[in-house]
Length: 335
Image (cartoon, rainbow, N blue to C red; front, top):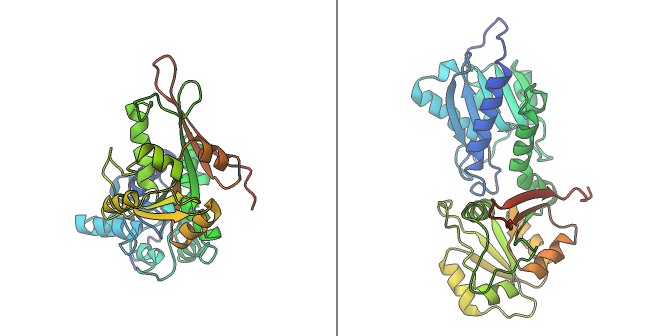
């Protein structure tokens, strides 16, 4: 175990902690969609003066967790004995999985304080890491306690980061995000001869959303009308990612040639008769987030039910100004 100070070491200023949380969240966000069945997690290590020693994230299942990767980076840089504060987006694990417990890795350093954004939502391990660290004499604090003007924004970002994993680990079902592009009249249908009407910035956002999803859900009407690729193009995709393409095709109209081409593009096409079966199967496959990219009929049908979790509406302005983007969460869900 790393050295412990006998005297009480002062906590770092709220602004330093807030900046560290922003860095940790950004690092984890870069790997959202790459870590299933694990959650995306970011970690920042600080010394007693608030200087950043390491910024790391969990990158894929079976790889080092964010805390262990940050500690390894600090050790490689020769700064491991300076570690004072650990800032992490999710409560450090306290159980053996593919990798050793992160709580023990932290205890093997000189860390005196740990700041946690979100507690572990897994009902089998909740509270384990924080309790273990506190029992060993470390000061454990949570983001919601941070007295800083950016607190609400950081809490919301950290909660959204873990939301797909939280739903999957507690219900066995994926987090359902509905993406909807609308013109200035509210129509989802592009003008004749065009495939979209949104701005370059909005198109990049759409591909970023696709990148973080483990599966895409659409209907046979969209396949037949647009022959969509459903690939990530405007930014690099996660290496080796095999995203599921779930197609609602009760009438079996999707051509076999389309399914074969989708597979050649690296997708895993699957056909379903109804959305309930689709979501149940996707959950069993370890899908944390499914992105709905469908036509107006299926989109409206999903939004009229209680199965969606987040709705991102991208609306084109009529005066040439930037697209208006709104994100809504389904607060009517039960349980």
